[in-house]
Amino acid sequence: MGDWNVKLRFAAKLVLKMEITKELLKQKFMEYNKLYFNNELAMCRFTYIYMRDVFGRYTTNITAKGEKIGHIWISRSIELDEEMLRDLLVHEMIHHYVRTIDGVFFDGFFCHGRHFVRQVKRLKKQYGLDIWICNPYWFYKNEKPKVTFGRKAIAFLRNRLHLF
Ligand SMILES: [Zn+2]
Image (tube, rainbow, N blue to C red; front, side, top):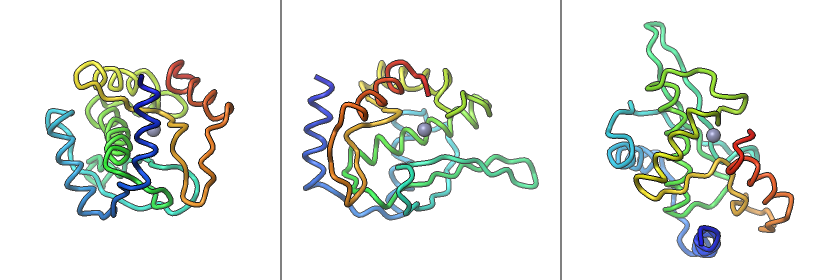
């Protein structure tokens, strides 16, 4: 059933893609912070990524005063609809949570270790949200949207077995 949901979403994204602006990212961050993180997260900075590299990224800058500032990088090389934006943003917000609330700087080699997985499970249990570590149904603009066996296998290893 979950698989169908993703497929329908993938089809819907062709018509529902939205204009991503930093103002929108900020607004959505506040919305999801309230909904899913009990308003505990400090606002992040946002930067666009244009390379065909990753869909989203999270880093932390530490100020001279030792304050941790979260930084979320969002790809402009994919078309996002509202749900994809939510999934992507909440994924990066989990990294922010692990880093600034749990205070964990090493959560596995690819940062999707047990602290990250704990939040994924909490969001699933409390809100029915499916936050993916790797979504095989997401493609870059100009990329042929082909869900190969290899893609699915990698997604399975990452999402279900939490290997990386
Ligand atoms: Zn991640």
